[in-house]
Amino acid sequence: MKFEVTILGSSSATPIFNRNPTSQVLNINERLLMIDCGEGTQQQMLRYGIKYHKIEHIFISHLHGDHFFGLVGLISSMNLNGRKRPLHLFGPEKLMDILNIQFEHSDTHINFPIEFKAVKPGSAELIFETHDFTVETIPLNHRISCSGFIFKEKQRLRKVLKDKIAELEIPANYVPLLKKGIDFTDKNGKVHKAMDLTIEADEPKAYAYCSDTVCDWTYINQIYHVDTLYHEATFMHDMVDRAKATFHTTCQEAGEVAKKVGAKKLLIGHFSARYRDLSPLLIEARSVFPETYLANEGETFVI
Amino acid sequence: MKFEVTILGSSSATPIFNRNPTSQVLNINERLLMIDCGEGTQQQMLRYGIKYHKIEHIFISHLHGDHFFGLVGLISSMNLNGRKRPLHLFGPEKLMDILNIQFEHSDTHINFPIEFKAVKPGSAELIFETHDFTVETIPLNHRISCSGFIFKEKQRLRKVLKDKIAELEIPANYVPLLKKGIDFTDKNGKVHKAMDLTIEADEPKAYAYCSDTVCDWTYINQIYHVDTLYHEATFMHDMVDRAKATFHTTCQEAGEVAKKVGAKKLLIGHFSARYRDLSPLLIEARSVFPETYLANEGETFVI
Image (cartoon, rainbow over all chains, first blue to last red; front, side):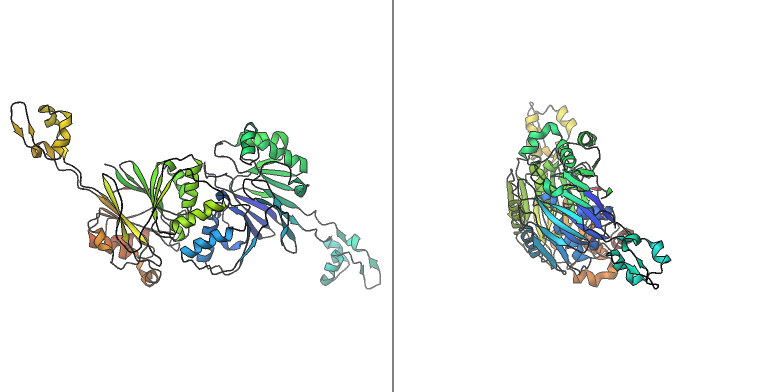
């Protein structure tokens, strides 16, 4: 199953040095989900070949402009492109007011349903679920209400051993039963154990998105053993006081969180405009957690 | 005196093919004025080296998103960059409501004054004036209230002939009087005619910005003899019915307006996303008005 994330923006607050404000697109088994939507996200989608109409779900972490100023334009463009299918939008309660006032005064009629679900501030809740994954909010601690999100694959059924299926001429419609552990009896009455005809499915994977937050460790229970952790890392650690004052995290702290929770991979982003060269930020995070990568625009990471 | 316009966006409705939604920056004698501010305008400013803090006046023609979705982000970035000087903003009445709801819910405190002047729909009025130029609105005919703008240099004083000034040893503090036409009497009592010591100043120039409008000729009285005319040209003329239905103009029509008013130069822009190659649009406008240019991103035109 495909499970990967493409970075559309890595800048904090303001676009700079060819870095765009925050946005990411998750591909879970060819279902595309957007996380945050800073200004210029639709231009980034054009640049990296992500079609507007493929996005069905958008998750907005909080109402600082660098995380949502691109949303009204993206929705307008979806509308102009003739979208009819619903868009599922999750975010702070006031987000719809902000969109609606702009649609109203520009006499824009959105011709597809926007199914909006207000995210409760401060609570960890399951906000979306399909047959193969779930999305939960992660309460973060920022200047204004802010929620991270954790995307978890569900435990999958066992995988069949194709050569054994062929050898025993097991009918295709029996395969789902085998995956569920039901043994197979052949025409001679011999019982073949499901466990012998199948192997364990891959471990379900999880992606956690922690943006923007002071590093106060309150949220780590929800992200233990996550495969890939995206964590904001606005500053280097020599500016930890500034990070705390502005409710942000340093690269060192992001590394410490990833290490503590036993993540397999850490992506850092939301870089302050003060850093043109990001390599010192990467070195700092890697000094704590070696499997760290910069969440650079246009890069895709397999979860 | 410098009088030129730099194009930051030439796309209509939605960004596409590396074309951004509408925005332009006028430089009138090193004073920078922005006209419209589609999404991604601040990124375009970074790309073309236009500093946020140099913009003192912004004119928004109407509330379709491709003309203003970048404004809230630009103002936020000005704020983050520590701006203290006032920003003078002209546009439709509801524009401030749209900005304010976003500042409010994002807990953003803008630390410089925004001096907002609501533009009256449907009336041609003088909305801004300095010692050397004026700005008037041009009522246009679009789906929603829309104003164009005309920027006119004022008639300047005559220019002195420097060699004659030196020859007659005319004191520097007399030069402003000469420019106003007051004759000079030398120490021998001889009168030197101001007209002989000066020449006519350059003709004052004007730039008209006509975005977005159906080509109904109602607005041409205000733009006669403009030096450079920017006119939207969303479609080619084979789509004139679509242009009329959507209250837009064709390239041929834009050429006809420029010809009718005796403009010296025509810039066309606001191109529909249906056109990847713009050369047929240029050819069509030039077939009517040869001095036509595409308002391409990053290009600067001297008025």
